[in-house]
Amino acid sequence: MKRALITGVTGQDGAYLSEFLLKRGYEVYGLLRRSASSDVVAERLRWLGIQDDVRLIDGNLTDISSLIRALQEVKPDEVYNLGAQSFVKASWNQPLLTGNVTAMGAGNLLEAVRLVAPGARFYQASSSEMYGKIQEARQSESTPFYPRSPYAVAKLYAHWLTVNYRESFGLHASSGILFNHESPLRGIEFVTRKITDGVARIKLGLADELRMGNLEATRDWGHARDYVQGMWLMLQQDEADDYVLATGRTTSVREFCRMAFAHVGLDWEAYVKTDSTFLRPAEVEVLMGDASKAQRKLGWAATTSLEEMVAEMVEADLARHKARGA
Ligand code: GDP
View 1 (cartoon, rainbow, N blue to C red):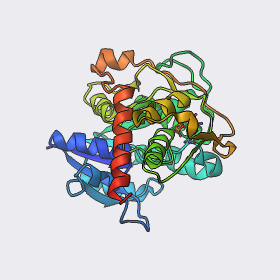
View 2 (cartoon, rainbow, N blue to C red; view 1 turned 90 degrees about the horizontal axis):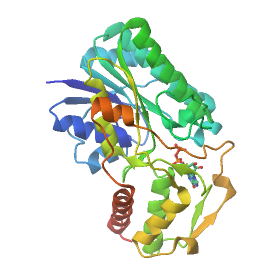
View 3 (spheres, rainbow, N blue to C red; view 1 turned 90 degrees about the vertical axis):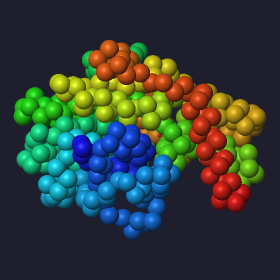
View 4 (spheres, rainbow, N blue to C red; view 1 turned 180 degrees about the vertical axis):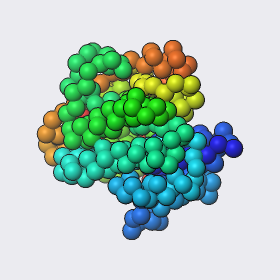
């Protein structure tokens, strides 16, 4: 039986990846950062019904000794580094914390793997945010990076360190450059979930408007469940490498709003207001990925359409609010 250790196990991708690996017979261990709100940490694992199947180990990406101890205890075949301060906007308010967790945290984990589990296969969660001010209309593994936020700068450090540990020490370390991927388990601060939650509130009479930032930004949005399969596929290859995962389709925030409101029969323009507090000091205007390498080498392709995902997310938020007694 294979063993996997996942950092960021309580996040969206950690939950879906755990579900995916459990179905394939893995023993799944998750690194859990101590927090005062321990009652809600396993919410996403609970949503998927796997909270009793994932073994949680105390640890923190900023404390290398906790990582060494976790690796010694688990003896993983595969390590997935999904832990990060992952909200772009927050990274301007806490740039150094973002660097400590998202950049140095990956360094700590790579170093710990090199020292105590050099045979383990390593996955680094890299991000399309690294393309930032895009240098090519469709971004692939060979497109130059131009990060536009402290978050993206931190992710770029982690990406190159992963490449460097592969080239320097022969670690089986792969970096997945994933374009935005969403689901009902997406954090509420991210734009898609903010919109689908807002639509549900408005539909149920709990709110009468939705305040948004830049509606013109466009993103290549896929479904997280499809993307975690791509992570796993990268670690099943004989050679470690870097891969873009994306849908190849880009859609504006405005259009996402239209689709989500239309799903419940409402006209978005009657409810969406723009509010400058949600604008960012520097914006990533457009992202559109080219996942042809992943398609060719991994046989991977995004399978969930944006329409299906919007419907799933709005329905899930309606169900959540109804369950709370709306
Ligand atoms: P990101 O691509 O990792 O930054 O993911 P987000 O979901 O946080 O943001 C996606 C895009 O939506 C960015 O270009 C934001 O500027 C834009 N956006 C517009 N309004 C909002 C908003 O109210 N909240 C968030 N999070 N993003 C917004």
